[in-house]
Length: 284
Ligand SMILES: [Zn+2]
Ligand SMILES: [Zn+2]
Image (tube, rainbow, N blue to C red):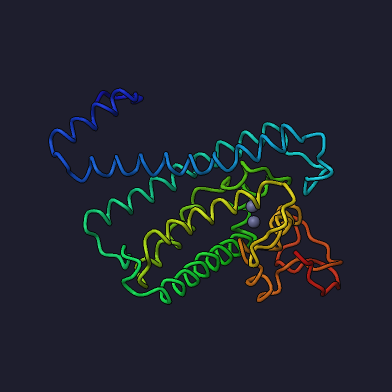
């Protein structure tokens, strides 16, 4: 391959040469699986974000007071495009990480994944699904909360908080390092307890799609009992250091960081408890 900027044609010929030199080899498999993971991730992201964008931000734009979480605040187009680019980059990074992990598994790497749902019985499958969800959601809370410590917030998490009135494109508009921490935290579970592979894949898709709904900026009341309304995370963007949870309000209730009525919050009010005397939690 020549020096200087690569081209798609050069990458393609490098890949073909690698396959020819080692048919069925690990490099060719890695490139293929990574490509599939990246494309699949982008398809899921755009398939959920585009309809929300089109229905609300294009067709129902004039009816914003009816549907918008923050009807008087709009993300400037320039920031929205920035969010879209950053989310796309992070979906690609996530796809490369997932593809690399899948290649490791396909090459016989050790994990505790299993592929026949009946292997540990239905009761274990249900229990492990609950555990996997709590594991994922718990890490989402603690990594997020740690990212709101003053220096971490200023060093990398502030990027996600440039977007006060969120749109679907803001969902994974975070610092790539933060994305990698979340991905690694999720995958560590696969080395700890037996996990049914399709259940884990489904959970990752659920987490992504619900995050898109929660960042849509559209008021959605959840029909799923453990999911709060989209105002829960919208308030995180509006009030900054409060409501750190992802899907459950459990962690915020446990640590007293759920937003309370009559308290003042803001970008300079660190600590997750706000200023003032209100003690009653806001209902989501
Ligand atoms: Zn945050
Ligand atoms: Zn957010």
